[in-house]
Length: 173
Image 1 (spheres, rainbow, N blue to C red):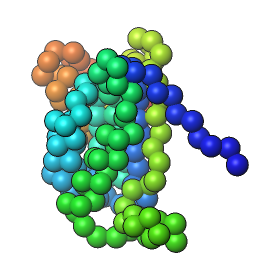
Image 2 (cartoon, rainbow, N blue to C red; image 1 turned 90 degrees about the vertical axis):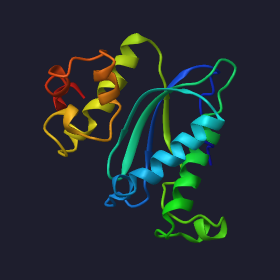
Image 3 (cartoon, one colour; image 1 turned 135 degrees about the vertical axis):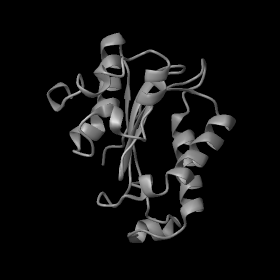
């Protein structure tokens, strides 16, 4: 059996996908306040720069830049996931393995990470985050999705509000 090896570059920028175990669930948007609380508590204890974040009903994407000398994104995700589950309660479908480890079965056990390589890679993943609600048919314009850092970036002038819905169609994702 081959073990999975993650890249652990200190101070690097990473793109993440984190998903619920039940991909038909809408728990993340139904319980957005609990997710925000878990995220903010974790970020206050273990700082990082959030370059992008989008929450969909059953999964989320994020781009984080970790502090210099720090490569521990796994602990951050563990804390966010654990705190979220403690706030919302309940149980998902649990395998024998999840029961033996006292997991509630809400989240998929692992997450996907990608170390951002350059400015083009960063821009591609940023567009992916912004455009994901459009890709999944949740909205017609990226700026119409309420659970996205695109709104922060529009307010900061990083992206034109008029372009935010139209430049991110599924052909570019």
